[in-house]
Length: 124
Image 1 (tube, one colour):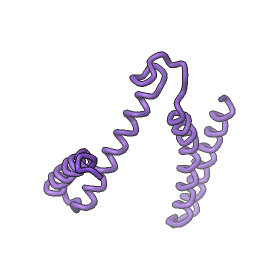
Image 2 (image 1 turned 180 degrees about the vertical axis):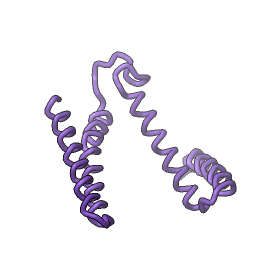
Image 3 (image 1 turned 90 degrees about the horizontal axis):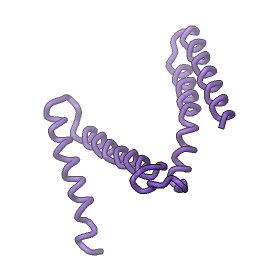
């Protein structure tokens, strides 16, 4: 492996470390947590930029005639996010709820999210 292969990852991680150091200095967030948050934010930013560029009319797909496999995969993942959030909400309510009212409200929200997800998927 050449040293030039590691140049940009090293620069990116250095920038993340400096930003994390600044955040941890001016807040109560530990350095490691701030570093992981900054790295995650940079990765998410890169994914969003790639998604926008691959969309029809984007930088990499100006004519919009074809959909890349990346866009198809991301759209499939995005379609399942409400269902995952609903299940997570139900599990958290069951584990940490101290009253029946919280569990009933959370299951109502889960049912509404599931109904919305199913109706959106059936329209496609």
